[in-house]
Image (cartoon, rainbow, N blue to C red; front, side):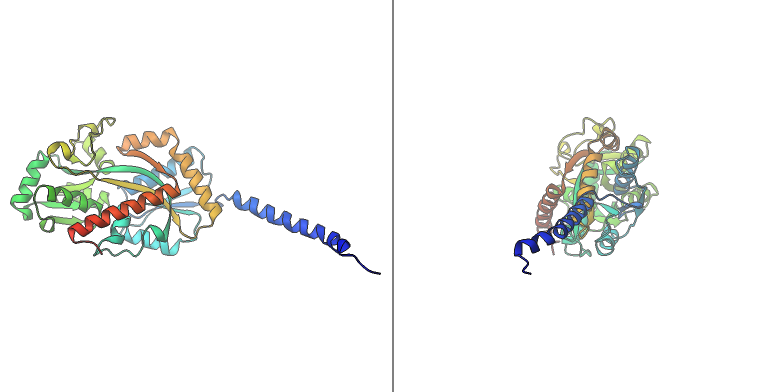
Length: 338
């Protein structure tokens, strides 16, 4: 008896359809990925600074609005001005779809400056979303003899060794740049500015309040509550214009209005491991976008004194690469580029 090709094909059809059904089910399951256990948000800095606040605010709103239904914990991993945490994340959590990282401008600065000690840049992780922009500040203790930015910079120019700056990052990181770009505008050699580094804005602020420094270079969100408490006085902010929508920060004079044409901003954003599967990347991109669209998120940013700014994965990656090119040129001008 001869079996036709048509008959053979018909006999195979159920198996083909079943296999196609399995593939379709697998794709559907893949597209509907959700976390199955506790989620961790890593802040590669100590408690109390800007990165820590972002991570804890995200965890609170994710849970409170039921955007993410699994429990969420915040992990602090300070060291090296974000280097310890970002390197560990890139190397150990490249495939961890249950862990996010919050990082900011110093993350790329440590990768491109000459004496930087980070092998990790934006191409070794997955940029998930730009979350906010924070402006730099120069601040002193409330009882400091320095009342204006000009008084401070005149003192630095007259005797650089008499003024100790403190900041939450090593030489060449964003806090440091915030101070030395001002010093350059005042005619001071950036190499003679005294600067002590701490692991995050929280530790640097503690050092200032404890008398271990004269001047803090940091950002608005890290300092605002201490201004309200009367412990710190801000001499200047790096925004282009005064932050008129903020009840506290609106009183901070800009660098520009005091005659120093310096405008800088510190971004903060969320990252995933580079090799996290695509469905998990899509899930987290959607959930972070949903979080930033809530009124609770916008209210928190306003309370902290930071500026709302959102970009999706592609937009955030392009933004970081443009920032990287800009700071590379600045480092070249300062003789600090790799």
